[in-house]
Length: 319
Image (cartoon, rainbow, N blue to C red):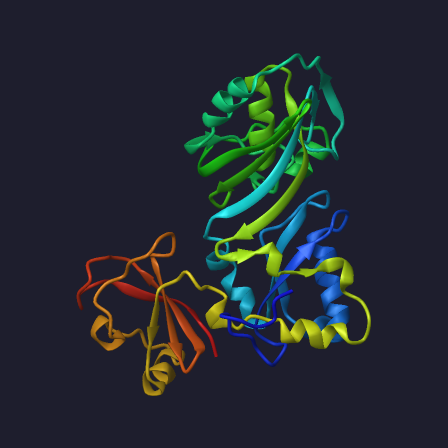
């Protein structure tokens, strides 16, 4: 795990994010419970996570500490990267290895060209139906709760973006993919839909999240190693400060006098921020205010235009 370098790291446990490499078999909540025990603070420690990983999946899980729990939507706004293996010829009700097999088919020879051509249809702005076994709400109830009771759940299609989909290897009936996509994309659905396109159907056999925005699993702490008395101090040393937890978001450095006013509810004007416009990629609707390396607030840009008449508002304030 990288504990230093270009990122700023905190000296306290209270506010920030931790990059964890979740191991197979653990739920995201299991990892949180282990971290709470490691810090020895129990219920006094406010903690959460951004972007749930199913127990069968592994990889990057971003843990939110203290005021870091206010950052979930911003942390998860960037691209997600996954390594995914689908198994042709076996379909399950959950679209993954945890479900009941509902269909088996013979997997005949498929050329690399056929697989590439079919997979390319899933790149770009596409419409996708979330799995019935998902946290999407149906009539106010989590879909997976209804599905587990045997209710038929029909969820609506929704737009998602698949930035890239590369074939890593083909060893039929297994096909391994590397996928970069927008938040809200279900890799299980891509696996099942690609299986149908190829003929024999498929389910997602394994999944590993390798990146969220600029954060990589290579820099994450393995969840299986959260044990022992010394682990709390090690995790604390690896906690990324609030201002560095959203590195893709455009920043405005402000003086202490203005920071104090903002923390008391004041919404600054454009000409007080020292910038003329907001640019960037997926974070161009937000702007973070920083004073002396500390995150003061996140502003939402309601109207872009780059002048003092721009419409901005406070979304989150940090003490």
